[in-house]
Amino acid sequence: MIKEKEYKSRRLKVAHSLKKNSVAIVFSAKQKTRSNDTEFPYRQNSNFYYLTGFKEDNAALVIVKKSKKVKTYMFVQKKDKQLELWTGKRVGVKKAKKLFDVDDIFEYDTKNIKLKEFFGSANSVYYDFKLDYSDVKVIKRYTKNVSTYKNIALIIEKMRLIKSSSEIALIKKALLITKEAHHKSMSLSNELEYEYELQAEIEYIFKKNGAYSDAYTSIVASGDNANTLHYIANDKKLKNGELILIDAGCEYGYYASDITRTIPVNGKFSRAQKDIYELVLSVEKKIIKMIRAGILRSDLQKESEKLLCEGMIKLGILKGDIKILLKNKSHKKYYPHGIGHWMGIDVHDEAPYKDKKLREIPLLEGMVITIEPGLYLPKNDKSIPKKYRGIGVRIEDDIVVLKDGYKNLSLSIVKEIDDIEASSMSYKSSSNL
Image (tube, rainbow, N blue to C red; front, top):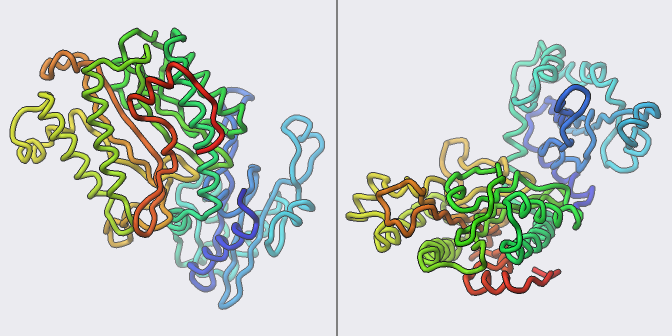
């Protein structure tokens, strides 16, 4: 797990980026009502968690930077026996002072009084521009003399681009659990009747192994359902002879995994399914080998499109000159998405892809990126060979960028055809990536 020393270091790094005579405030996430008096499961605001490691709501972090001195403060909900009877124990101010290395901690109910004091002499105020209106209203009420408002999220999210060794360790743990879930699904695909049964088995393994939750809504898309990119109904019957695209990953210690594997319902790929799968797999491998510090994500995208386009021409899915097809974006009909995205506290980590001058940020040592080429061939598309219609394949791995290369953190989650077919015959739980 991440230690308080690292959280403090992040807070100080944020402070270093602030202007003199400024105040920065980051709020915890709010509870969200599902209906009437029930709430959705609570999940902390990612930026607030990144700076504090604190999981409770009704909390805030304040950084006050004067000419040379920096002070950090936290607000937490006070202890309330009656409230705790319903919603669980709270850390409270007394214990929080032992947990967090900040200058002082106050009860959340006093934040308005304290903020008025903090904002009094500030020239600049930093806050998340996506805040709820009620919080923005509080800030603006006490900052009428402030000349500059800046978005604190931009500073934090830039920091989140590079993962520490402790962050990588949590991602690896998430992948260890996700590996077991995907391997289990390979062994069960021929025994279950519905997509949701497979989803249940996957998410049971997540919970059983201490994962906070699934990192995103699991996709279990059989047959032509795989050609809907964000298919989450997961309610169709599994049919012999079809493929299942499973895009599922857990969140462990607030860090995500994001893995896609495509497997046959009956445990055996048909010749046509192998054609598509082998093409996507070969492209994925080639793109992963390109990864190193300094390369552009757009270069990975262009190469993946070129390779998939070439492959589709060979299979008769596309016809014509490759240069013209690429220029006309004919391939995008079957490969409409990006090659990958940043991953970390959020599965699509909210970190920038461009700098302040709108130049693309190159891959840097310590970044974590997904690589996920795919081909989606709708059942009703009469322009492609009949044998390929209704096939959808995506293969996705989680990669950490190194100075002179990469490390595939999910390498041991099987994806070779022979290994998938073997896994469908005999599943063995493993504890090592």
